[in-house]
Image (cartoon, rainbow, N blue to C red):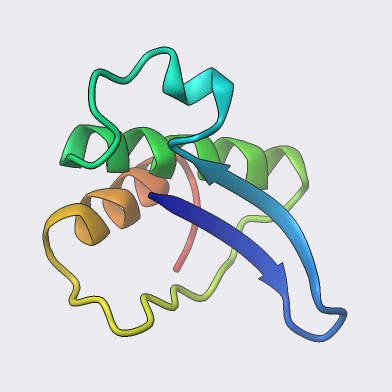
Length: 83
């Protein structure tokens, strides 16, 4: 599971988090469940706020807003991001 904050105008990634990140991978027992999605959401919020980003648009692509996608989004909101 991963999340990115991208500046579409400049085509750059401003912040990213993934279950493959060593910081997250070491504290996760599984990388595909809701708990892992919540950790990615918390991490992306923390990294975005550190980069001075608070407001974002949430593009879930073809994924429905439930389960892991909702868990990631809720954790990012709780972490301080405004969707």
